[in-house]
Image (cartoon, rainbow, N blue to C red; front, side, top):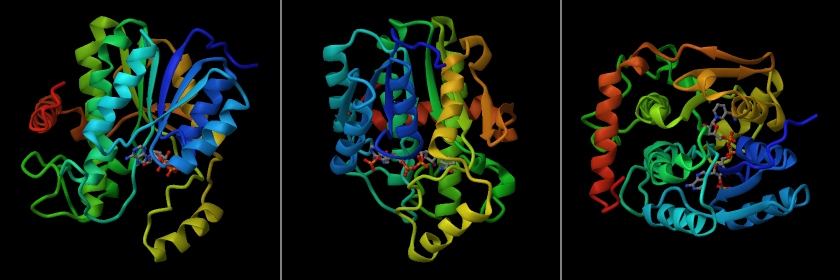
Length: 298
Ligand SMILES: NC(=O)c1ccc[n+]([C@@H]2O[C@H](COP(=O)([O-])OP(=O)(O)OC[C@H]3O[C@@H](n4cnc5c(N)ncnc54)[C@H](OP(=O)(O)O)[C@@H]3O)[C@@H](O)[C@H]2O)c1
């Protein structure tokens, strides 16, 4: 029996595929108003059709989370229809394993995984405030931990080269983008706690999705093998961890990091450096400055 979410309004980024799509489906099954957000028109339309068959309380707003203008348009479109937002699920993320730039000149990996969600979340503050107790649930990953570092990087947040414009390596910057999402979650939990807006993050655990789509050929061949030999969750199982967090009270989740898997979802420790409040604060200020340059103040 699903817990009733009938009065809830939620936004799910990355809802055309993988874990985000699973979350959109599960929230629709629970009766919530679901605003699906994704970029690829064909995949977005198909997913919207599929989830609309479960509930007629679903809407799709196409948006490119790699574009400042598109994020602003998405927020304007949402605000023109709704006066509150109960849950923001930040699920989208690119896995393009090379250096690329967004239309605004940002590093694509950094922006699609982290800065775009930083902007989106901040722009939705008033609406989250109108729905308190409300929640921001952001997917991060175990990959931010030092033991899984490419090379021997001690500190993953490089405030002098946040976007890898001086020296880019995919391993280092994918790890940094994931860590940035965790530090953003913690900083948000401190900044918005008094409003009763909870901010939490999780690694959903290995889940069979489309995330290998952008991998180079050798990895594309390896990923299906990986899925066979490792204990892999279905999309429904991966998404269930986010629903679990959505159903908890704000006190149980605010400022916490969770890890999911076949055995369930458990509160866990993120890397030591992720708890450095002063770096989190600097990351927030640097993120704000980067967006200010685009006349996109938060
Ligand atoms: N799967 C796992 O095992 C696993 C484990 C740990 C963490 N994660 C993380 O979970 C998140 C979701 O991954 P997934 O496995 O569900 O991958 P997925 O199946 O590839 O889904 C990615 C989603 O993100 C959307 N997206 C990507 N870039 C976007 C952009 N610029 N604007 C709008 N939407 C964008 C895609 O939309 P389009 O259809 O429009 O491209 C798609 O809906 C990622 O951050 C990933 O790193 C996954």
